[in-house]
Length: 157
Image (tube, rainbow, N blue to C red; front, side, top):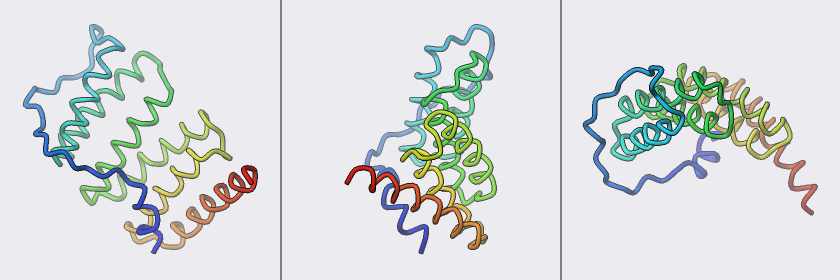
């Protein structure tokens, strides 16, 4: 199964941290770029506590800070992935796919279509499409991911 193969690489959550009880606020002009990390950490704490809805709220706020500051880098890609993965864990596969495709675009622009990062994003999308019930799309995307990884391995040998 496509999902089983790629979930091996998913993050293993072993911490029993409880999510912060801080109120999540909207992005405003006083938010500094440095605040993004603190907010993303709060999202990570909520994620580790398996409060995925709260994690999404924090990650969305961190994403908005980066967007407001016009920062599109690996941190932005990571935040998009975290949001998509939380939606996946909540069973909202259509939203996971939507955000996952946004991350795929950012990943393509940052690392290129022949990168391991791009192949990983494709692999995650394949899993989410499979869970969504679109197995043809899942197989197509998984094949793309495997071809990229095959090319990378060929270069390393």
